[in-house]
Amino acid sequence: MTYIPYGKAAAAPWAVEITPGLAGWDYSGLRIADLDGAPVAFDTGGEEMLVLPLSGSCTVTHGSGTFELSGRPSVFDGPSDFAYVPIGEHVVLEGAGRIALPSARAGRRLEARYVPVSAVSVELRGAGQASRQVNNFASPEAFACDKLVAVEVLTPGGNWSSYPPHKHDTAGPGEAVLEEIYYFEVADQGLGYQRVYGSGRGHVDTLAEVGSGDVVLVPYGYHGPSMAAPGYDLYYLNVLAGPAAERSMAFCDDPRHAWIRGSWTGQEIDPRLPFGRTS
Image (cartoon, rainbow, N blue to C red; front, top):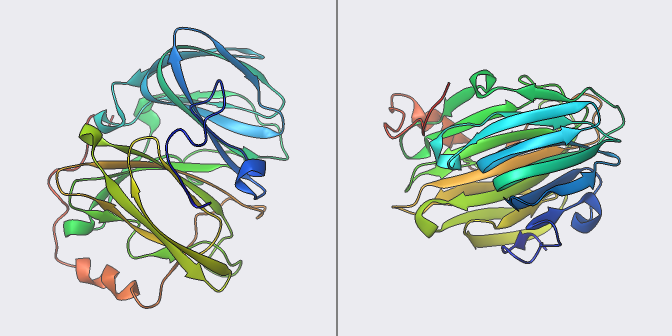
């Protein structure tokens, strides 16, 4: 299953639970906890994890200490501080809000860390109706993990992102093999659309209407565009991991649509960007 509506991947205490085993692949995972004051305790096992407030705030208690995450009112109010917890750790979350835990099966135990919001890199990409904001909080260049890569993308209503369509499914110069999760939030209870289609790696054919809490899995193939319906700003959390020894987000555009990048020359970035606070 490529498209998973909100509620279909719930398993207490998680509002969303995507593990490598449930997804049918080897590395990438995601859990979402809706905290209401009661603690949520778990073991990371063989997965390294980030603790990222989507809304609200939380305390992260782990084997060697405690992190206080200030969080944010919503994903449309700018980036958030976050924490990293390694493999083999017992963790307790307490607070109020929606908390994301992107994860990946890992082979090395790194130290637990806290990252303030002021250290989160914010990038504006594209132009015109392909303008979007990327919060590179755990990109390969921004933050050290063993396998895990995670970024946030925000697309103003009426714009397209993950565009032109691209893939990460063939090892070689300029492309990395990655399993990718899209987790969506949409402003004002709105809607967006996500396209995933096949490459030489296999058949997949998805065009899904997405709302807040929905998930799309990309085991291989071209993905994009992500379409924000007019009037509704679109957010997605990308979680990626793969077998390569060195973390990378390298991709290959669909050759039929690669020319689109050249069309942005001379166009302005959408003035509605950036969203919220950026430092």
